[in-house]
Length: 619
Image 1 (cartoon, rainbow, N blue to C red):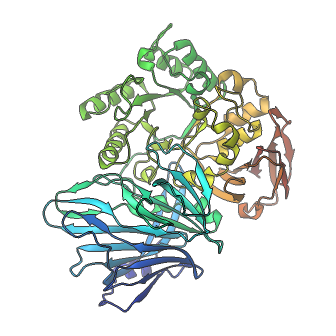
Image 2 (cartoon, rainbow, N blue to C red):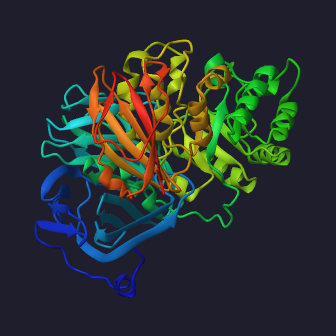
Image 3 (cartoon, rainbow, N blue to C red):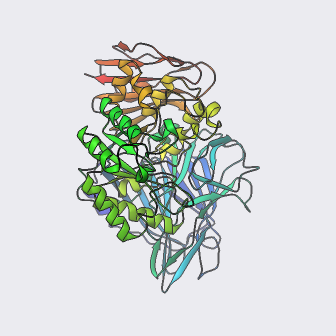
């Protein structure tokens, strides 16, 4: 909804109040979500998030720790202002091309002279808040006190922290025996039925990304912990947004709150930014791109399946056996295929690591390398193996995104942190790995028995916050086999959102599929007009629909080892009276001939670890 004249006038109004009594309720007129504040003024303030009057979570402590003040939880003293906020913007990737959200922003003074401000925004789909500091002279932000208290018995899906975020979201109902550290996002389901997902957004220069710590905390308490100390030269410092998406499960999956609160892009020209499906060489051979004939096979596959991109992966700097990187780029160009090129970030794994190494770290080297790629017509870069979430790494990632944009290069981060809204600020940021994806079939046998459960958890956790380069759709086996059905694998191309969707299997596997499967791979988009959750529960099943033009692509996934019946809520798609349904399904690794129908079914039977894809074309 566009901002009205009245709301614009209201935005100019502020209200000032003295310290109040013990309780305060922050609301938005269009939302069922409230933030209740207690203990303000004289005691450490406690915030409670509620939906429909029912408690979702409590924050027993808020505040930032600096080197110039005692490490005490903040106390809210007074309201500085209350204003409406409106977000209305377009995206290049994500759940929908056009995003809109409205809410109410409160600025709360947590000192006696407005040098500590807590900004709280309440939306229909959640709450976001951040800290603002003013201080003369140099200072450091050393830690944070923000703590989420989750009641015992609340279901939770948490991933033990790793720098690369490549782990499973394990389900539990207890805060006992917690791991010391968890990564964002974290998903919770209360006994009253409310869902919430917490993460962070809008990490800028001079800021550190964060995780959740439980060590030295009471059971069920998760403290936001920045990955490093931030040094400031004085003046104003602003934290990233702390984001809590709240509501029903479809509210979680469909929310754009992470990008809503992130900074708008400053790019004037974005026409060159083209999401798409990619032919990927690594998975089938567990090697990079040093063998020229193998690279050529993947370029030919991209041409055969009408894919726009080929990724030339690591080891391309030592490519041989008949050609080099220049030859490969020329061959791809002749086939009308755009090239993406892999680089090592050279911050984490450099000892005996595959190259190329140390080409992007210094600004002058980075500009030289990206200029060379641009001159060759290369479309983008995949940059791998980052060293954590500290402010130096965050600044480096931003440097890479900005430099790449100057040279019209798309960016995909691997071995790196999760998206935190950069996809809005830097629209050439197409995807990030930060997921236990299909490449792990190469590394060990852990993924094989749990892949279906994992795949049906990711749409409710990791993929909620931004694009996810899982590298899906493997019909054949790599070093370790998969137990999911071929229809399950095909559905991953729709269930998982990524601006660059890398198809992981071999040319021999894809080109051996029936004609209707090859046709589907030729047509599946990597950018979506809209996204709707039609049914699902983390780890059990997913029915998710994504729209492209006049077509709805619907992925059905079974995360269990039993046959199940899935009943999608078709009313959410507002289908007209005339449409055509194409059903892609099968048993095990055997495909059924594509079925066409004039209406969707109320129920679909999915075999163990199975799936299906529907393409609904509205006439």
